[in-house]
Length: 76
Image (tube, rainbow, N blue to C red):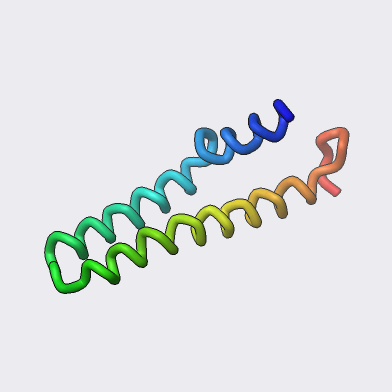
């Protein structure tokens, strides 16, 4: 169980691309909500759907990278 939690935390802490993508989603949602007040529903939808989608694709990318490495650390 500890290893699962460590891997989950590692996705957020060790992966700069994920953090950057999430920050971009948040910034875009904030811009839409403040600059164009009539697009609040769009901004909320972007925030609510964008973050999980980014996390999903980042997890797939990480899984593909780990699958290509053998148990001894060599590339397969």
